[in-house]
Each structure stands twice: as structure tokens, then as C-alpha cells.
Length: 405
Ligand SMILES: [Zn+2]
Image 1: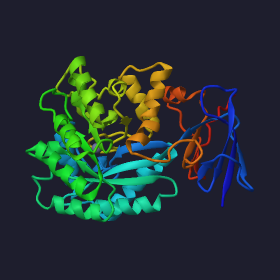
Image 2: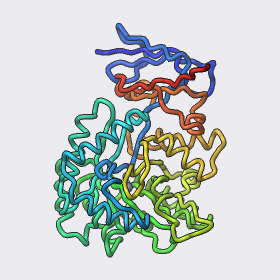
Image 3: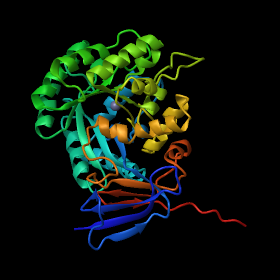
Image 4: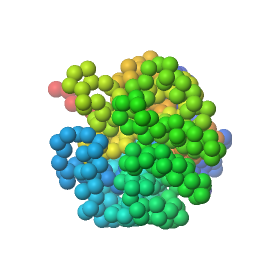
């Protein structure tokens, strides 16, 4: 039995409204536990832990092994494929651990990581990430989404390996239809496997700025056909940014009706798309604000760190929220709060986390900021000062201090 009482916690912009929260055995409870340790937050802002819905731990931090010349999606896939030939379990583990440790100190307490499965890498990446999941469970909950980055139907042997990983406990099945000659056929096969193994689906989809040739309709159709509402996510979907308003709103309404969710990956999408334009280069991000208004569950995520898909990254979800706000010209308090929700409460809804939040019964995963309001966390890219996982402190960050003459 371990108990913690948080006093003088601020949950919003109102500096006068300070609250007391109680934690016992890793969860928020409604009354203080016996012998609780007291933590005085002195009016600092308390938020639930951040939720990363889409990242690739297995191919992070490989920039020094790659050579970029075009900066395109095709080059990123090809460069990563050749780097992958030298991946070992220890190598994937080491690079994944670096990213996890960054993410933990940026306030992330839950993460869905995609892991590549194909006959070349086999289950090497999967086995490394499973060890990371166990070794870092004290600070972050990892869920593993296995997917065929090199194609499914074009790449014999991949499906059997995916099924093996699912049988060994991979929580989610991912897809990358644009890597197969017949994208619709990959989508249909993955739905069949998802039903067979009772898994949620998470696709990389419609990842360019040409409004023609969208595969989103096939995902929506299959979601209805299999009754998979609320269990299907599509990531990137940058083609949505190329649609005029009426067409976009019609697609958004069918996504909402089908229960298909959308993840925007701002760093990657801004880096890889639109390179065919020398001037007036489009921004090309899925317009989450319009999708949300039509009732689509959305999230913002990191996708990649330090590789040819995204040569940047500090694993800060707050920075991704700020980047999306900036590029999408969102600035009012309500808009910034919405951006924050896409890395926290809405992300948790997308991943169907049953016990997320600060109310009694929820897991005591929380972070503390020195910021005037939740909207200001996004506007100023505030770093968290400390974080807790299941009521146990997992990190702290010293405040910088001016040294005046
Ligand atoms: Zn991805």
C-alpha cells in the first residue's frame, strides 16, 4: 500500500482554484489513504500524462547511417531498408531506449509504437521492443503495433511473421497499403486478420498531396463491413489537406459515422511532402480541426525521430502540438486546448485507454508544469518539471536559474 496526497494543485488557468488529489495503490481515489506522503505543488499546473499514439522506436536514431539527397518518402523507405539490414536486437533496444528516456522526461506516460515486420528483419525488432516494454513499464506503458512497411501481398513470408507476432502478444495490427501494388487488397486482408486475432488496426494512409487515388473509402467500407467502429486509425492522410471544403466535410462525416480515427504526424508530413513545389509550398497537414468538428476522434504524434522520415526530434508531444497549431494557424485559448487534447485526452480516447484522467479510479499518471494555463503549455512549449507513473515519481527537471551580475 502506497499513498500520496497532492495539495495546492492547479488543474486549469484559475490560479485561485487550488485542489487536493489523493492517490492510493497507483490510482486516484476520493479520500486520503492511511499514512499518505504529502506533495505540495505550490499552485503549479497538473495535467494527466501525455499519450503518443504513433511512433517508430525500432528505426529511430539512424541518421548517421543514412545519406539523404532527395528527402522523399521513397528515399526514406529505401535508406531505412538498407540500414535495417544491420539491425540487431541489441541495436534496436539501445536506440529505442534512448527515445523512451527522452519521451519519459517530456511527460509521455503511454505510447503505441509501430514495429516493422518482414522476412529480412523477422521478429528482431519486435523482440527488442518487447524487452523495452517490460524494462520501462515503471515509467511508460508501451503497446506494440506490428506492420508490413515493405508490403504485405508483394512480400511473401510477411503475413506469417505478422501472425506469429500477433500470437505472441502484439496488441495492434498496422498497415501500409501504399507499399503494395494493390493497396485495397492489403486493406481487406488486414481487416480479415484483425477480425481473426481480435485486434485494433492502425494504417499509414494516403500519404501525399494528390487528391486523387484516396484509399480512405476502402478503409471506411471495411470498417462498416466488419463492425470495427472505434478500432481503426489512419495516420498521415495528408491527401485530406488537398481537398476543398465541401469534399473534406463529406469525407469527415463518413469517417465520424464509421468510427475511423485520424492521426496527424506534423514533423514527418512537413518534412516529406510538397517538395515538388519550389514556391508557395503547401503545408499539407491533415486538418484535424475540421475533422474534430465533424465528430472524428483525432491525435497528433511524433512518428519518427532521427531518421530519413524525420531527421529531427526531442520526443516532446507538447512541441508537436505547438508545431501543428503554428502551421494550422490555431491560436485562441480554445484552439490551443484542442491541440493539447490531441496529445492527451483525445489520444487516450483513440487508443481506448479505459482509465485515463485525473478523476478517482484513473491511473495516477500525471505531469507538473510551471505554466499559467494548459493553453500556455502549448503556446510556450513548456517542459514538464516532474512526472509520475501509477503514483510513483519517474523524473524531475531542474528549473533554469538566471545569474544576474
Ligand atoms: Zn508511422
